[in-house]
Amino acid sequence: MENTPPDHSLSVGVSFGDCDPAGIVFYPNFFRWFDRCFHHFLAARAGGHAELCARLGALGVGLMDVQAQFRAPVRENCTLTLDLRVREWRGRALRLGYEGHVGDTLCVTGEEVRGLFVMREGRMAAGEMAPLRAALGL
Image 1 (cartoon, rainbow, N blue to C red):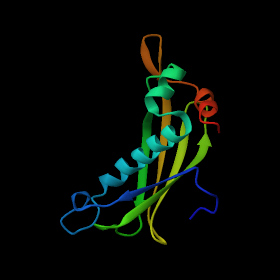
Image 2 (image 1 turned 60 degrees about the horizontal axis):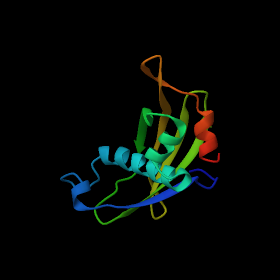
Image 3 (image 1 turned 30 degrees about the vertical axis):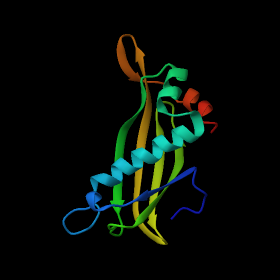
């Protein structure tokens, strides 16, 4: 568990539809919730994905890689709190870390690598991250 405060947190209520037949969250939902947390972060920091991309002349802030480790089950009627931390700014990528807790129990950890996608010479390409970092105030 990280000792630094998160850059953003989001609570997700877990419902029956999020779970598999054993009553445990179906694992792809964690990736959906990571994405929701990231977009909630963009909304809080920069007015949202669409507004941010319009301001930066970008097509999107897209996912390049994602992974997760499932530490403990999450079940129906739980509240999962996701903490997002900006881990590393690279020239053309941003690395984010996630921790998901139910109460004091660490249930999931994960990481995303995202890029700022722009059009260059008629093709979509990863753009420089400095404008995104400035827009997010980081």
